[in-house]
Length: 439
Ligand code: NDP
Ligand code: HSE
Image 1: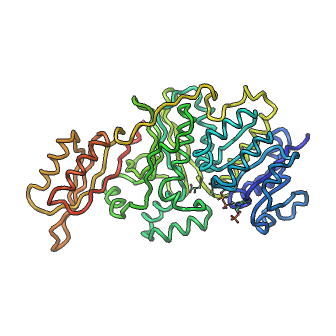
Image 2 (image 1 turned 30 degrees about the horizontal axis):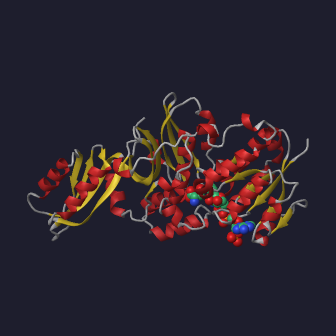
Image 3 (image 1 turned 180 degrees about the horizontal axis):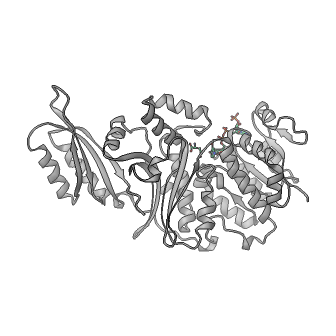
């Protein structure tokens, strides 16, 4: 059987993992795909790295000119593993224009330019596959797009950034400082080229944007996502959350609600008894709630060379199986047919409903708690639990931690502004959202 010819752009962490797994499992993969999948050309700016990845395989062309692969008529599928949306975007659009199928792990590119890229692919009748772009080795795109196709998806909530989960877990377990743990994640190849994308929640927002589009049948709407990362998270909140029976996780959440779709990334308290609260290190997990199936949970490695390579190769097998099928009869890029996508609005954050964890430092004197409780009541916020921490010896200030019932974000904004205005409140109120993730 004739092999399908693949051109690999980028031989870094994921490119290296993809090459290694494909070489190691070539015959088994060919038995599944129906024909051999062969990387015939690789490109990297760093030729030394490319040579190391290819090793002694004699028939692989190595170049530092990635566009020469994109323009090579002998290549059937271009695998883009460069990252970013500069050169990578040009390469993907050129590959599509040249009639080639594309496999990419580049969530940033698809979250920001996906509408243009999928439209171009649709017009050319080629496939753009992106399993590796969300949650690394977990086949979550396939699960939502195909496995759950019978369902009206209600919500998705996931730990979808390995770097921040690794940082949160390691800091909690070892007490090591943030910067040290981040350096580990970079050395292990988990972090993005610019790790602020991980820490500030941007990478998770890219991924939840893609999941949201395929769950609800909308175009990608990254610019509407609400994004908060973990850089402002204080160690005492991680500790207090534990004491109250919660774990803090950076969650990507998308939910169908009456006014549209919620699309948000932020740290959140999750009940420690939930499976997802116990997902540690670089592991990712995605909870998907469908109306028919109920809640389903997907777990695995969210980053790293071979786990991500595994997802890239799954796409290569899919493309190999499907590329001769009539484009009209292939699985649509965003799960719903392109002419059936709906511009459902993203709900503004002020209208999102959540329970909250509030931590405030107050002067330890009579009436302070009553003032806080009155402000919360004035804003229709009901208190679920409250803990006051004993002031340290000789200190006249105490930490109060409040858990609230569900309320709108705008109510909590208004209450916090008033609490911070009290003469007895010291500094800012810390607010974290609390997600019960009950099925
Ligand atoms: P790396 O930085 O490890 O690899 C990218 C490689 O591409 C580098 O060798 C880089 O060279 C090379 N490169 C950059 N520009 C060009 C160019 N114009 N032509 C040819 N080569 C070029 O990145 P990763 O493998 O970590 O990530 C690749 C993609 O996969 C990204 O989109 C990332 O978001 C995504 N991803 C990564 C995961 C991970 O675990 N790392 C998991 C899931 C997705 P140089 O270093 O010299 O710039
Ligand atoms: N930087 C990403 C993460 C890589 O840490 O999850 C996987 O997409």
